[in-house]
Length: 511
Image (cartoon, rainbow, N blue to C red; front, side, top):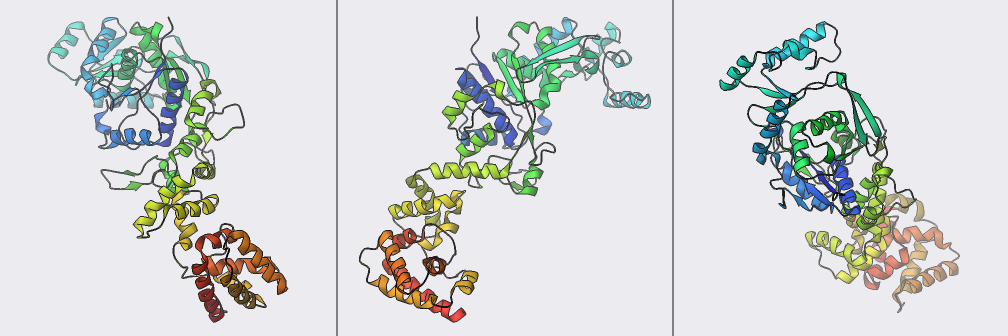
């Protein structure tokens, strides 16, 4: 019987969620929804020494901002609760004991000093990668090398121990990967990884396999850094008798630096001026604040759209996708094997496309928050019209004030380069004549203003293009912006005439 698709995103709460982690969550979500399945958030906190306060809530908040929704999880509950591994501690021991009883794992009592001695001994013998494996295990203190009565004595005395998997000596282990095909690893390259500790806490390897089994996970979609662990996980499924329900694996390509040279890191973002975290993060230990996409003004849908195309392609030229469209188009088969280069400029482009697609009313709601913070009280309809004029120039909504402040406040500074270049010859006379003509204009529509502007220029033998920019500067203070006559019409006749008179006096004084 075909099983219902169930996937999980299982981060560790060791810090903020990197955009690579968000992409892993996104691909899991798209795959689940495409196949009518369930998506689960599980927190893997078996390593309590690396736990960072606030990291778990950050993960939940960041994915909620991205619009990535879960069916079950640490924040929602569900039929397989608890979803936090530290709260599932008691259920792992039985599986560690099962592996020991079946001969697929063993107790190891080696101290840290003895392990270090072993590694140094192997290094001295020119062994490139010292490992606890089928060769070295015979010379270490474990239940394979010690007499049975001594093992029982040590356990009864409460001696510290770990449970290690017993990797087969000569075997080729096959991992079938949905992206990479068949990956073959010889057991001689593997070591006897620790699965369980005497304090009752499992390691990642045992806990993740047991939880995936108990939570009925059908597909494990995770980063390629976990590919070397996959053969171990395949063995665990076999040794525990769960081979028939072993999930399918898909290991995602890395997110690379913009130059393609190495994995994308926070340091790269700091150096090149872009965030790598979805939300701002304040380190609880150092107090250091790292910027996030939300705080930089990115629209979450644009961020998600960009991220979806980093390592996956739809097989078409389409670039702008809504979440439902991503779900419909997504397939694991179209995920690349090679790393995907992050492009900060392309990320801004995505945001610009989404900004332009928003309604003027929605943009006005965003801009009004900033205007209110600045103590500017104005009509929403007016703000909508302003947004309609300037949104083509903006990549982010938080740029609206820098692009449009002159719609709300008289400019106090004027582009000196434009004044120097343009305020000469017939220009002062033209501006004076046009100001007088404008004061008599009853229809202050942009079409009427433009017709008057061109007629005045023609009557004075002046090229309209030669006076257009200085006219703009007189009204706005800046040499570039939206369609000039639409801008003038929106600002209004009284304010425009007042600004022209003040600007003319200023231009005369500085030229």
